[in-house]
Image (cartoon, rainbow, N blue to C red):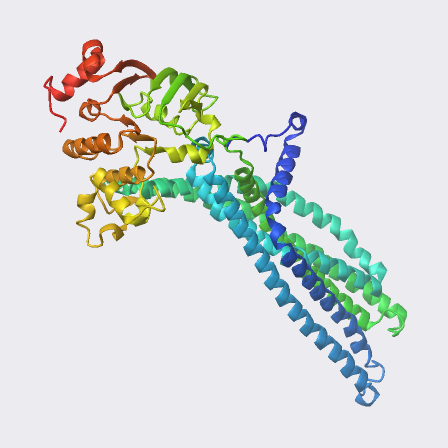
Amino acid sequence: MPEQSQETQIPETVEKRSEAQEKRYKSLHAFRIVTKYLKGSMGSVVLAWLFVAGEVVCEVLIPYFSEFLINIIDPEVGVTEAIDIGKLWMYAGIMIGLALTSTVFGILAGFFAAGASAQFGKRLRQAMYYKIQDFSFLNIDRFSSASLVTRLTTDVTNIQFSLQMILRLVVRSPMMMVFALIMAATKSWQLSLIFLALIPFLAAALLIIAIKVHPTFVRVFNAYDQLNASVQEDLNAIRVVKSFGREDFEKEKFGKVSYFIYKSFIHAERILAFNNPVMQLSVYTAMLLISWFGAQMVVASGNSPAGFNTGSLTSLFTYVMQILNSLMFMSLGFVMIIISRNSAERVAEVLAETPDLVSPENPVTDVPDGSVTFDHVHFRYSKEASKDVLNDINLNIPSGSTVGIIGVTGSSKSSLISLIARLYDVTEGSVKIGGIDVRDYDLVKLRDAVAVVLQKNVLFTGTIRSNLLWGNPNATQEELEKAAKLACADEFIERQPLKYDAPIDQGGTNISGGQRQRLCIARALLKHPKILILDDSTSAVDTHTDSLIRKAMQTEIPDTTKFIIAQRILSIRDCDKILILEDGRIIAEGTNDELMATSEAYRELYETQLGGGDFDAA
């Protein structure tokens, strides 16, 4: 489970509570967070409840009038001439009218309940999605992308269906039960005590079932996260899976999680299966007791119309069935609420999560220039980490400089440049752009001024044009072509039949890795950034194209500060400054010539890659 944010942390006084009390606190807190998104649907909620109330009133009045209908026929006479046909038709008409009115009210109640729950689900998903957009990488890591997908889909759907059931059934059933008990009491308050005696037994049984089954659903939804993660990972790496022939292994891994979910649901259903027998036992016990004592009361009163008679007993049996149906629907709603309780807690965790990276109250909105300063910077990804990822980094990069960064895998090169765009915050020290701490800037304005082409190049489903417009939604065709030319992407774009309107599949899988990299560079250039960061983003292009891209940047955007992370010496040899990182520290810095003279590590790398020769970067 993810760490609790400041908003969701339990106060010190709660720590003294029992485990059960803490669970109740968590559930109530989740309920308060989630139900905030019902506000826009309260009109539909109120109308649904009003129509439900009308439906219930009509239904409980039908048995009331059925008593008069039955008693019209005198059992001692039993002949048609003695029947008051006028009253018979009157009561029959009233009952038919009540049935039709109840049907109309039921339809309207269902309509408004469905509308309210659909709107609620929409707002809940939207709120979660918008909240996720504000999450930092650290926030997302706490949940995992697979878990967030499950919460946005399965969990919200569970809550939405649960709300609809609450509005339509769970509210209707208690109302029906209460009104039926009241009407039963008007027939015989003594017999109605039988129902009241059974209610505590039912409540205790349902509570025990809820306590027993809830932990199982917690495990099930955590397993759903693992299942989604497995599917997501398998689909993203399907080429690797097939190239290594690991289909059977992936099937087995998927099967294990699926089997766990299956077994967990079976276990939960075994517990929930006690719902129906408990309900049936209670209701049929009530019917037997009412039959026994009611028959005695009919005999004692002589079946008098003024006393407890056959009509009263018949209507009382109808109320028993109404209460039975109410209890059955309550049990169904109860099961859905148990399932959605855990979903509500999981959704509330996302909504209550506080983003680690936010703009200050009075942010700086203008980035003066592209100068970058690292002042005794230390960084670790979490407070629990045993050591820093970056240790005491000190840099002073003038605006317009080109900085090359090189080092072995795991030397924290990507971590270093992530701090410039404030994708993470420093643990100690400060990072400044234009002489201002990045934490003082408005996040949107800061990231508009810093373009990052990450190591993992990502394109979105659409066209080449739509992907490039991510860099600048208002870019003209001329600007698109210029950026593509600078990134050396124009040559393959022009070969496409639809050129800039050529389709791009999800993740850009229908084009090569080098083409994806060049489109991502062009997209970044369209931002007209003051700082451009290329995180090993030319690794899939040939050295000649790499050289052309670097030369174009030097001539076309000379005022932009450029950071180039690379594994090839040729990619950074001509930079104004080269940094060598090792284990989160800068072990050497300088120009190519300076490092060749002073750094044994750089010289060995140079000679390994270039054989000691003086190769032309072009």
